[in-house]
Amino acid sequence: MEVFFATTNEGKVTEANEILKKVKLKILKEDVPEIKSIDEIETIVEKAKAAYKMFQKPLIVEDTCLFFSAFEGFPGTYTKFAVRTIGLETLLEMLNGKTRNAKFITCIAYIWGEEKFEVFQGIMEGKITENLRGVSKPGLPYDSVFIPNGFDKTYAELGDEIKNKISHRTKAFQNFEKWFEKKEK
Amino acid sequence: MEVFFATTNEGKVTEANEILKKVKLKILKEDVPEIKSIDEIETIVEKAKAAYKMFQKPLIVEDTCLFFSAFEGFPGTYTKFAVRTIGLETLLEMLNGKTRNAKFITCIAYIWGEEKFEVFQGIMEGKITENLRGVSKPGLPYDSVFIPNGFDKTYAELGDEIKNKISHRTKAFQNFEKWFEKKEK
Image (cartoon, rainbow over all chains, first blue to last red; front, top):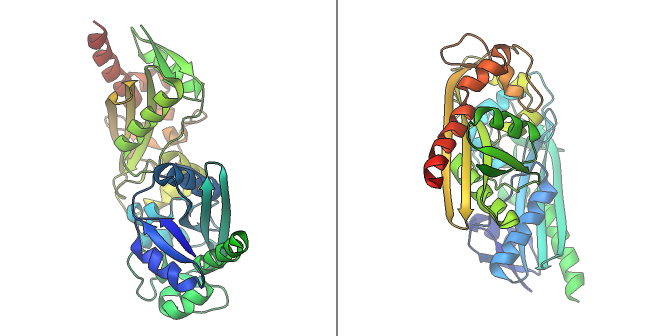
């Protein structure tokens, strides 16, 4: 079963195809505009609608947010920009003296009509380190500061094989695949 | 001369009408979606286009960003959300040991056709305080932490009368008015 994935990030498609068993994702490589919102569900739904308008065919979009328990909604939908503007070092410092609990949420929306869509999530709770640990891959800077619950290593230290068995993104894609298989039957 | 102003913030319209001499602004009170972008010009242009699509008439939109010199592009287009998520106290702490230089930029876009628009800016350079100083008005939380260059008080301490003579927003609306008067001649 082929499904289109609107993203400019080829790495995400490769990673997702390693996770998925029956669905094969094909990239639609164009930048889809995102709205400014603090809400990750609104963000993914509006992104899906914008992508559907652009491509006029069924597809998925994906977005991953990190949430620090110490700050409600932060960096959240600002996750990517927070690294670029504030930088990882200051982000780690902001948590000094505060809880370092955090969670990663991957949201996927599958859309097959202007108002026909379904949202899937994968959540991983964990902790933010005090220093960088391990070398993260390009585009995944937080992997070297996030320790998933039940482990004592960061995603970067755990490596792809383990990470892709357990991660927030894995869970989200598995949830999507389970639903999609039923839908297509 | 009347001009429509698409905003949900009535306070902004009142303030701008006190600044403007010949133009009278009338509110179009509906929420205009903003795109997620780190660039304040792209943000205001896309907002103007979205508003024009909604209302189908000439109008202005406005957006104000604060930029800390210590972090490129931050809080920038995330200015409003940064207070809501990170909070002023932590924002002030983030600057400890770093430069407290900052600038406010107000962007206004006037749009009178799908691809016909003009952008105006007003910039005020200044410094971020270490503690809250003065009582800011609702919707303007940064006024109690921003000292404009050439003064030793925050906007909140200076009060409306002085602030509205010198502020970034004032400069932006004056730039718009000057241009608009010529255009309408």
